[in-house]
Amino acid sequence: MLCRVLHVNRSTYYNFINKKPSKREIENQRLKKLLLEIYMKAKKRIGTRAFKIILLRDYGINISQGRILRLLKSMTLPKMSTIKPRFKSNHSPEFSSDNLLKQEFNPKSPNQVWTTDFTYISIGPKRHVYLCAILDLYSRKCIAWKLSHRIDAKLACDTLEIAINKRKPKEPIIFHSDQGSQFKSASFRKLLDDNQLLASYSKPGYPYDNAVTEVFFKYLKQREINRRTYHSIQEVQLSCFEYIEHFYNNYNPHSANYGLTPNQKEENYFKKT
Image (cartoon, rainbow, N blue to C red):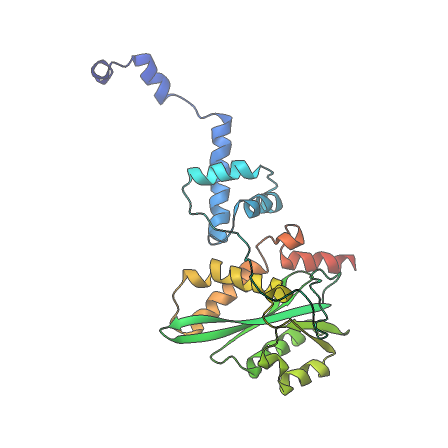
């Protein structure tokens, strides 16, 4: 009766209800399931390039970024920007005598160059907490981080002590920061001297000298901090732990590591040595 009312041949109707999905459709459904799994595990933080790397790394599936993009669009998942920050400065790129790093961001092994900086995180109207983080430039791994209600030399010293206790360096290390008073305080300089860490400073007002750390904070805020509302330092602590220790160090493929996570980059190095 419906076929007669709608002027549809019965054969057309039965062909439609008995149609089996093609191999391509079945494969796309399987890929969508994996993409959704990756998307949720990464908590909506990655783009098509990272999807491609994780599919190959974790599932042995090699497909193009274009196909991944088409599948993601068909799933109507929100996109995540992966544009790196662009800094504007009126300063010329001349380095001061205190800059030992000189924008050489790719050391040959771990524990050659560490970089650090602060960022602030809002926990309510006119209330902030401060995060200090230290990166090892070889793998881009965040090797130490700490939160505090105050942005002072104690926060910088406490974070550095965490890094020293974890890495136990035996050779001199370049330790690069901006020229903040916390990093030039007597207590911080003494901690550097006691542990064979060589102080290196960016040129004032020139963020290119510490670009890796700047980018780390940029993505931390874009992928985690700015997507949440915090009311206490404990909430920020849990959020930073999940992002840094679980996602950034252990899951996210890093472009500077040719798609390896920071942990994988270091594990591969120590296997060879």
